[in-house]
Amino acid sequence: MIPLPHERCHYMYFSNNEHSLSDDGGPVIDLEGKVVGMVNNQVNETFLPSSILHKCLDSWRKFKCIPRPHLGMTFTSIKLLDPICTERMRRKHNIESGLIVEEVSKESNAEKLGIRKGDIIERFNGEYISSTIELEKMLLDIGSDHFEQAKRLNAEIDVQVSRYYVFTVDCISYANHSTLKSYC
Image (cartoon, rainbow, N blue to C red; front, side):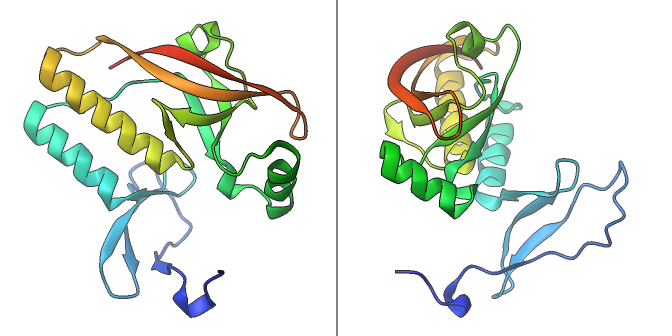
């Protein structure tokens, strides 16, 4: 069921559109006056939810660093695509959610496994994933758990990634499950 406009999440952020290098963004406030996150003006006014900020602060207090695996990829959520495109993907390929690989770092383990721009990541460590926020929470949890046990940075961690190979937006071939070596 689609929520009515007054039932949807509404957030407020004021900007004067003059961003300088020293502008770190500001709080995002919901209609009840609660701070729900922070805007990062350095990365195209992205929104960082307070749950991620809390995880980072907890890690910093506990470990004096923020251990987090680096996958060597950037993503966009399928949820953020044009509704026509998401409907086409759902009907033709039975894909309703996941993350689209936007960029793969050169010589990263992701590149060595054959992950390419346009691939769709459906599951991460066996769990279905539909947003970059979910992925970030998982990565922070993995990093914290690993650091508590190993007590060192730059350690190798295996993570499992389930993906679809994508050749164009409309052409998805088959699923593949890979184990990606990541460094925390």
